[in-house]
Amino acid sequence: MRIVIGADHAGVGYKRDLAEGLRRTGHEVRDIGTHDAAPCDYPDFAAEAGRLVAHGEADRGVLICGTGVGMAVSANKIPGVRAASVSEPVTAALARAHNDANIVCIGARIVGPEVAAAIIHTFITTPFSQGERHERRLAKIETLDRARTSGA
Image (cartoon, rainbow, N blue to C red):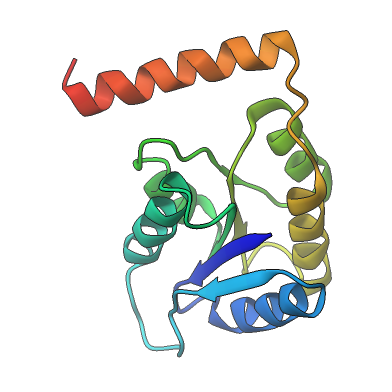
């Protein structure tokens, strides 16, 4: 699987370790930064990862900041992105199965590294259920995306 991974200064350590773990399990990982602990702005990384996922250049995204919330809010501004801020594996599985989430956002100040690794493993291995009610809801989300980008 092609995975884009990014973090701000709060998540840079997690990002390095998680990216290495993904590579060890055979995934193609594109690390978009940041690469050091100097203060930086999470929306920059969320926007880049979101565009890569929305344009099909990555299958999934992993974003890490202090809480995961800022990354999720930012990434969800990109049409076609369904980012979920997740703090445990059950929500990661449901975000994939029910919402077809394509980016998972994790808070380095909220979850430990082992839980973060479990979240990512669950997120990338759980398929979308394709249930009728989930498909119907996704269609409504896409309508919201179109309305936002058209100014309606």
